[in-house]
Length: 349
Image (tube, rainbow, N blue to C red):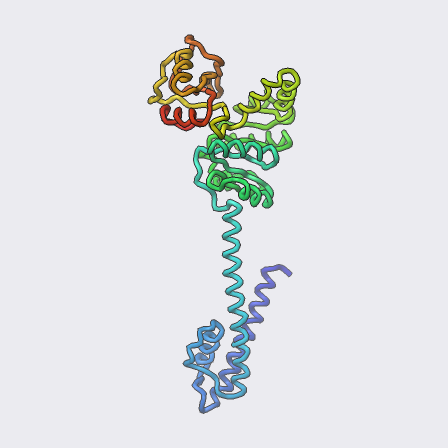
């Protein structure tokens, strides 16, 4: 027996019993001279007003038998009221739950989308929020939602629980308005499948892939991935640096994290726009000026080359700063704030 048929059957039985009780009430009360229920419509009206707990009192049974029948309507009204309250409570709870799970979507723009939550994603999200940047996290587990909101600023982080990547997930995460997508699955095959799913509707986004197999870097680059990184490769290089050049490793590790206090030093990048005072300036001259005025060190100039970028490290006066370049600099939060004001743009992409 199907669910739809069961609903139909029980509804039919319930309606039949209800009409039968109304008719019994009418039959009993219509023969009572003191009763004001004289027709079937009077009995029907009384039953509706009683079941809905309105109780106008314009019609009511007078005979003992009629009152006994009316008792069924009174008891039924309690059940209906309980059902209505239960349904309203369930609707409110579901709305709150859907909102918490991100089903109403976000209007974030220029944000980072992290797909798949794990310890590595947690470390990345810490760095993103420390830099006051916004991020959307797409996770398959409902349990991750509470953890993320309990440990990260909800004004910077939006969490979406979704078992699959599809058009509805893309819309809720507002991927069309984001800057960067990080595919962070533990299985490189899953990264590949989801990259293909994303590249078709969103070909112009910056894609970053966290790989386990470093030999796949070239494959992913050919598929349009902007940056590929390997957790094992980064960790092994840092460990080797600690073995041979521990002080270099300490500085490198510090630079990889976002600077929070003025004692911290971090790396930043700023896009060159038309109003930037250093547009069409030479690399070494800019280096000296930034160091003198803001205690900021120019590390490199990034220039767009097709869909990718070419990084000029330690630029000299042979290198010219042009529109849409990125300046890669090193400094503390105070210097960052000054550059943000002078350059007229926030750090990052």
